Length: 293
Image (cartoon, rainbow, N blue to C red):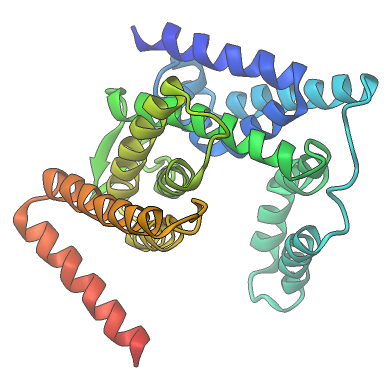
């Protein structure tokens, strides 16, 4: 029953990715959690996990070529500080093979992941040309990510093993919970900090649904580091993401930050038992003392 709805939503975004490079970047950003949502809803993709990669890669590739023909592709995303830092990280990872004690396995992993290097280092910078287009891509990614999060939460194929949400792909093979945790953290941050130029009721509804579902994914993924980092970024930068024009608005932002904290811990208390909440709080306090000293 869930498969037709998932396919319908993704087909809409795939068509958008073919027509608009900014949508293509949003689809590319959601590659890993989208793959898991497809695996949990469509049986043929569950049986052939690489099919989702090829499908998304083909859609993004068509969108790139179509954008080049229409003159919508810009090359300003290259050779800036962010691109250089990311490219250097990939280059250093490849260079580290020279002194690793397990060269054969390392080379195999690098070759298997080379397609992702092409997609994220070479293709992705061509899909946006300025901060305005990047903002639009983040909005599309937020909406798409919200649908993915909801699909993951309601899919019967996903289950908890060792406190981590995922799908069993075989006797000893399971999907990575890190992709789910990253999606949850992304939704928490983007839905909280993103500012719309005009008040839009539909987007606000998606924003609230995205934040709650993202928080639930961050918790269920078992990645406490990602959860705490997302909470920290959300609360600290929430007042800064809104223009402060007077004292009243400043205090309103402070109240909004407090409300975010209350909402976050309310969801955590709802999902965890009292003992789990106590252990999470103890772990957070221990980390704080350790970092503080």
